[in-house]
Image (tube, rainbow, N blue to C red; front, side):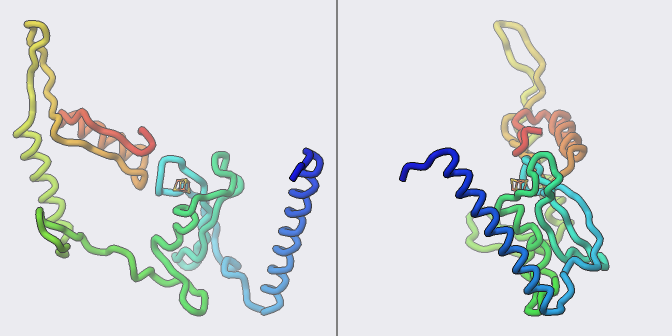
Length: 200
Ligand code: SF4
């Protein structure tokens, strides 16, 4: 089908108008049920999506300490109200709606440390004290076992104090300050392979 630039704008304009009318209609229907809007008594907080380094803006509506709704922030300079499928479902990271549309804790959340031993085919529930001690112990063992203190460069001994056996990947769930501290800790341990999804 041949379409001129003028035809294109006519078509997209008509589509936008139809969508706007539909939205108004939906709001009217919602109003006609007499049900108050879910966000009516909530307070609005502007925050950043924690899933990846793009950093899209999200508005969270909070009522009595519970998030009742989360949606894209149209005033955010990067995302301008849009969210990808992960960001759009961020409400469900903690809550789901029950059959009456009220938020309740999402029962599918992971609330325990799950550990799968080498060559095992199942996860075991462990506590955080065990997990953190085990992680620290394994990092220290690996680092001490593999630390290279000096290398020979053309007959000259150069101090490097590095290990190639550990790779550290930062997290978009952490703040810039936390990632800065991770970076410093890695450098102090001699870890030279470190990265982050946002390249922080
Ligand atoms: S996960 Fe999606 S919504 Fe969240 S910051 Fe990244 S691109 Fe944006």
